[in-house]
Figure: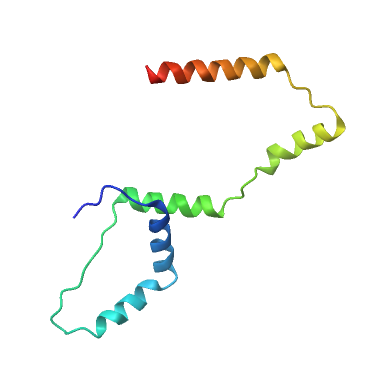
Length: 104
């Protein structure tokens, strides 16, 4: 059976649960069933495994890239950070035009 839609949150909880020994608990629950019962197997695609690894890497990464934020914060505090309103307006207009172009 192939599952096309994957809920990212559930996939992360499942893979983390197995890494912590959650699968062992499920196996012990199966042990109580009759010996002839068929065991269900789940196989994750390579994309799902890659997504799980990427999700774990993202969860362990810091939310703020301090090497980029610190110099800007220091410049703001010292009053040395100059913002060109023309550059800001130009980037906003470019973004709006790109969004319109993509929607056509």
